[in-house]
Image (tube, rainbow, N blue to C red; front, top):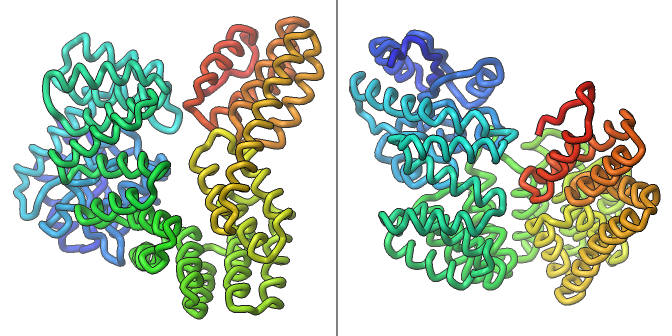
Length: 538
């Protein structure tokens, strides 16, 4: 392999180290290599150019590290699957990198190292990336699961030297598409040949999707006994337990933190601790999260809001107000942030007995809600403030809007349930959310019944209104698109209606690219749309 043909990016906060590694890279043939001294500069370069490989030091200074950077660029889809990522680390960072679960580098290299060792490692991971290119080209921001799976099968048929990695990717793709029985069979076949932790965790996830959570729990617990440093096992077990035993889930996350101290797991711990009313532990976790990053790239209003709640639930009013104040100081000023801060301050003032200040803060939050489109967490924060301020009807209206829009998103529904629980309305909240879900199912079923009975226009009117009102409800958008396509099929090509159908299919993809009915809607559109119609890019 000729490294001279590749473009590289070297990231290190220490100029002397950048110079040293840059000389080593040049000596092994990598002449075309840009440099970045911090995360901000690295992201700027990633936005301008495609890189074949990235060499990143673990310690990037100012409270940031290479593992955080890798997670950030993967989440934001700034780094293609085809780009090789090598992490350079000393003994201190080794544990964090080597135990990384979801966002792990392609390889890591311990200091000190020679140019020869660096070259060998880079060639190895680039060769692997190139071998898996037929799969990776269909993965990323718009994953084409069918083509990616076909590429997996093709490489397996050719007996690729990376067949085990191909099987791992195939299992992930099958799970993402909801094909649990196929994934289960795949993992069983792998485990017949060898014991490997990722296959055991994958099998557990398939069992959960297949409706066997008890068997999955046993398997995950056994996996962690055999592989106590495998973080993905802790994550999967905690995610399973959170539905039935949040205290046990909190204990599992605590165990994971003993393996590797990460900001995201501190957030997970904090959320569980709040659910378990362990506010002292929640405060510790969220304080770690907000203090961990001094660069601003990883800061979140959610962390400050949760820290404030953890404090005021312990009657630490000054600390809670400081958390709300820090939210505004460390994050960009937007209408959304102002609404979130006001909703948090309302709850703090209520806890402190300052009704006048609470009322003013709530009014500010509600005004922002009516004038701006807010994210889910901000909406639920305002609902929580409404409950605290004695406005339950307003709170329920907000929660209903959120639950209808995110009908199939269990994380959002669980968060909405948490708002009811915080208000001491556990049973009422469960019933309210269940009724909201049933109403949405009824709306879809009624529209389908109208279409089948010949009243297609009424069905379209009902579904289009709902799809426009609920941009994150993939099921409603898919049904609206299919109803429009049905009318086009019956009455002849109408480019306006085809355009509407295109918009709703795209809307559904953005809401849930893995929705099981999306492929059918896409196929229906492509079957009916004439050659000159707008093509679907999903």
